[in-house]
Length: 317
Ligand SMILES: NC(=O)c1ccc[n+]([C@@H]2O[C@H](COP(=O)([O-])OP(=O)(O)OC[C@H]3O[C@@H](n4cnc5c(N)ncnc54)[C@H](OP(=O)(O)O)[C@@H]3O)[C@@H](O)[C@H]2O)c1
Image (cartoon, rainbow, N blue to C red; front, side, top):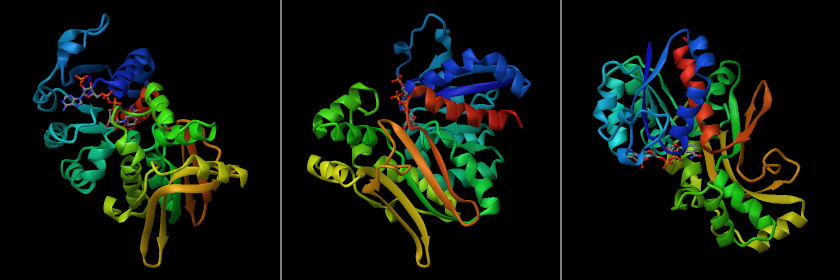
C-alpha cells in the first residue's frame, strides 16, 4: 500500500485528487500497489465539504501529515512558503518523497531542499513548478547526458501571455488583466505574474538544472509587462512581430546571461505563435540543436498532470 498526504486542496490540489480518483485503476496497475490518500492539509478545513470525500481526511494541522509514519509521498500544492516550507523539511527528514508545484518555495530554497533530499535519500520533484503541463524538467537530465545546453528561451507565464494576446485584440491593459482574472489565469493579486517574479522563479529553476550551475533569482534581469503599451504592441504587429514576456538564459564565456522581459519575437516563431495561456520552452543544445516543448502553462488539470507524472516516476520505481 502506498499512502499519500496532500498539502493544499485548491485549484491544483483538488484537480490532482480528482484525476487520481478517476484513473485509480490505471494508476494502481502501473504502480503495482494500492494507493490511498491518507490526509489533506488545508488552511480552513470547514470550507471543504464534498459529497464524495470523507470530511475526516481534512486537517488544518500540518504535522498530522508530515509526521504521519504511514505517509510515503507528499503532494504539495499550497503556494505557502512559511509553515509549509518548514513542514516540507520535516517530511523530508521523515523519509517522505516530495512532489511540489510551489515554484516560489523551490526557487527560494532550491539548493537547501535538494541537498536535504539527497541526505535523506528521498525524491524531490517539481515538474509542475515550471511550465504547467509541459514535461520539461524531466527531460533536462536526459538532454544533458548527450548534450551541452547552450541556451533556453521560453514563455513561462500564462497570465502575461493572456494579457498580451488580449491587448493585441484591442483591449487595454486593465481590462485584459480583469479578463485574465475572470478566466482563472490571474490571481487576485497579480503582482508576481505581471511584474515577472513568477517567470524569474521558473527560469531560476530551469536554468540551474539546464546549465548545472546555480542561477540565482537576483542574477536574472527582470522587467514585467505593466509598461507595455498598446502602441508598442500595434507597431510590433505591423512589423510581423509580437511582444511576449520572454525568459532567456544563455551560456557565455563570462557565465550565464539571463533575463525576463517583454521582447519582440517573430509571429511565425515558436514563442510568437503562443496564444492565451500557452507556454513554450525552446532548449538549444550543441548536438541535438533546438528542442521545443509546448503546452498549457497553468490550470488545475494541466498542472495536476505534471504532479501525477512525478508521482508515477517515483511510485513506479
Ligand atoms: N493554479 C495554477 O494554474 C498553478 C499552475 C502551476 C503551479 N501552481 C502552483 O500550485 C500551488 C497551488 O496553487 P493553486 O492555484 O491550487 O492555489 P489555491 O487554489 O489558492 O489553493 C491553495 C490551497 O492551499 C491551501 N493553503 C494555502 N496556504 C496554506 C497554509 N498556509 N496553510 C494551510 N493550507 C494552505 C488552501 O487552503 P484553503 O482551501 O483552506 O484555503 C488551498 O486549499 C502554488 O504553489 C502555485 O504557484 C499553480
